[in-house]
Amino acid sequence: MSDQPNQLEADRRAKLEKLRLIHVDPFGQRTADLMPIADARAKHKPETDGHDGGAVVKVAGRITFRKDFGKLVFMFIQDQTGRIQVAIDKKRVPELDWEIDRLLDLGDQIVVQGPLGVTKTGETTVWASSLQISAKCLLTPPGKWDGLSDVEARYRQRYVDLWANPDVMQLAQTRIRIIDEIRSFLRARGYLEVETPMLQPIHGGAAARPFKTHHNALDIPLFLRIAPELYLKRLLVGGMNKVFEINRNFRNEGISPRHNPEFTMLEAYEAYGSWETMADMVEDMICTVAQNVLGTLIINHKLPDTSEAGEPTRRIDLSKRPWRRATMSELVEEKTGWTFDKNPIPTDKLEAIRANHRGKDIKYHANPAEQLTELYEKLVEPTLIDPCFVTRVPGVIIPLARRCRDDDYFADVYELAINGQEISPGYTELNDPDVQAEHFHHQVGDREEQQQVDEDFLTALKYGMPPAGGIGLGIDRLVMMLTGAPSIRDVILFPLMRPQG
Image (cartoon, rainbow, N blue to C red; front, top):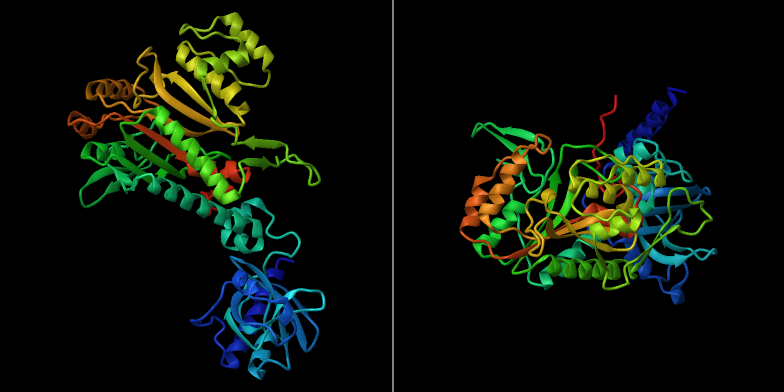
């Protein structure tokens, strides 16, 4: 059995050599006037049904099905827009083209030209008048029914997954449309798209472990960015009043269904805005994207443990506008009965909460802000399926945000939760250089966060940054929410994987 894959490849290589013997390049050439398969299908007119009566089209695609009836062969080919049936009739193609057909396998990529028609079963079909091979597939493709079903293999061999599993191609294209819609939305509102450094001498803008590298010519350490925030704020100082970047961030941390070390984030900043400004904007943006891409504001998710025949078990309603806004303290009190008073939680109260939520690892924190955050993240956030802006978060955990004017214990921020996870944070940005310096120096003492003081950013603030609102929005998590993908690795074309072997 161990020799079988090698034998299958050997059989295909034998056909490859036979193609060369008849002076056919098995890896094709430039071909003009190709039409996407979806466009070709759209050209079919019922009144022209028949082998020769329809529009002549030229299409290219990979063979995913093939049935040989001797002098007549039917196959399906597909490209990124869809699939179409092709009929190869020995009487209708040149002799060389028929020889090429005899040497084709599943997975081969071909170019076909001919008139459109239908078969007796009503299938739109290209009746080939010419056939070319564009790439010989030397490895056996996944089976027709099970596709590329092994999850690890799918992530490692996305180049196979995309054509073996049509839903994967559709998801990839949906992601592209979502990003296009975000760009269009922001540009229509006067935001400038900018680019900021991915290699930074000081990593900042978030609390995360960075990837470190070294620049040989300058002989200095550099970091892959964990966030672009501090550079985007420098642009506000420079006079750009509305900016955004759809950026790649890198965090040297764990991998899970919600985390990938390399991920895509939208960050946007608006001078003279606030967290309320940005909350209104992100609500409008997500609803606009959902309506334009999906055609609905009701998102139905089928959870992994749902049977095939079952109905979706999770429904996300984006249409209940304005979306709920509630403080973190209110939400925790609703769930636990603990009224947050900025003091450590009573031991008996914490034990009662633990007893009511068995199976949840709820830790004790002497710092009341950390305890409030712990209870929110463990007990509240996973239950927030419909959108909710969580406001008045303890300021100690958000050093780049301005504190609330009526109570500086809390930060003037929101955390938007949808589908049980944070999708977007938004701040009223801190623009006081002296207060920001205090916050930076407080962070430096935290070994886990590994923060450094960005003196150049403090210098920029000393020149004067206007009051502003800012947001971050996780593109990968947004795509997961809108499409029902269960893992972040499903919405990233090439997720990071441990090397094989």
